[in-house]
Amino acid sequence: DAGVTQSPTHLIKTRGQQVTLRCSPKSGHDTVSWYQQALGQGPQFIFQYYEEEERQRGNFPDRFSGHQFPNYSSELNVNALLLGDSALYLCASSHNAGQDTEAFFGQGTRLTVV
Amino acid sequence: GESVGLHLPTLSVQEGDNSIINCAYSNSASDYFIWYKQESGKGPQFIIDIRSNMDKRQGQRVTVLLNKTVKHLSLQIAATQPGDSAVYFCAESRIALIFGKGTTLSVSS
Image (tube, rainbow over the protein chains, first blue to last red):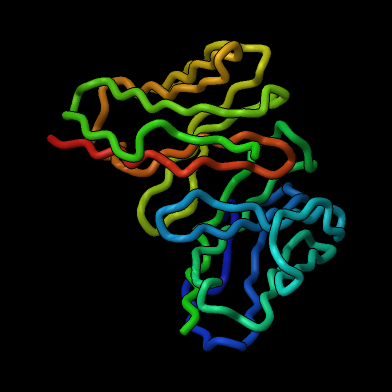
C-alpha cells in the first residue's frame, strides 16, 4: 500500500499564474481533504471532497478550487497566485467522511510563488 | 474564535527522559482529538487519538490524557529517543482537522 501520494513534490510558480496539485488517496479511502501549511504554522483546512463533491470548505478564497474523480483521487487548483500562497500543501485521505475517522497525510507539495 | 492551541512552542529533553506536550482546546463540543508528529519535509504522521468518552489512552511509548473539565490534552512520550525529535500537533476533528501551532521537541543524546 503506497499510502497517500502527492505530486509534484516541489513547484515554483510566478505571481498571477495558476497551479494544479494532485493527490491519490490511500487504498480503500474515499474522502480527500486539502490543507495549507505555512512555515512554522499548523496545517489550515482548505476543503474536503467526498463522493466527488465539496463537502466542507475552510476560510479560503474562491481562487482555491478542487475536484475529486471517480477513482477518489483529487486535484487542488489555485488561480491568480499570490506570494502569500507559498506553502506546503497537504492532502489527507480517510474512509467515510466523518468527525472521528483517522486521516492519513501525504508528504505534501512545496509551492513557492515568486 | 474556536481553536486548538499548544502551550509551549519548544521543548528540549535528554534522551531517556519522559516528555510531556500540552494542548488546550476551546470547543467544549469537540469529541475526537488526534496527536500528529511531523518531521522536517514530511506530512503529519498519526500518533494516537482519543474520543471524549475516554480520559486516557495508551499506545506504544505514548499516552494521551484528556481533561474535559479544563479542555486540556496532553501527550506523554516515555523514554524519549532522538528519533522522536519533530514538531507535534494536536488536532481537533470536526470533519476538518483543526490544528494548533505545534510544539517542537528536541531530544539530545
